[in-house]
View (cartoon, rainbow, N blue to C red):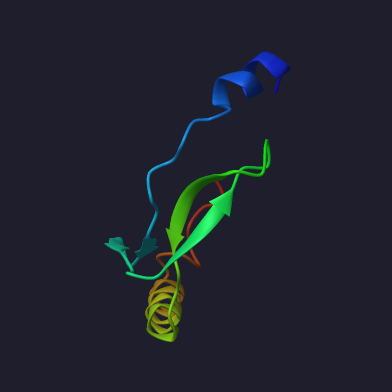
Length: 77
């Protein structure tokens, strides 16, 4: 990345982000701030995962592994 590219990104914000679990957007009322590595200023927020979110994600990953959706996927996928 060139300095000119960095300057274009400086000050830009990213929309608030949630979790993506089992092909669905999962949001949360609890948020974490993410600071830009360019200037240390906040540039977005992400959903703060709960134990329930983790349980959903682990169960989803387990299903994907056991059914072969993930475990048998080609490396290019």
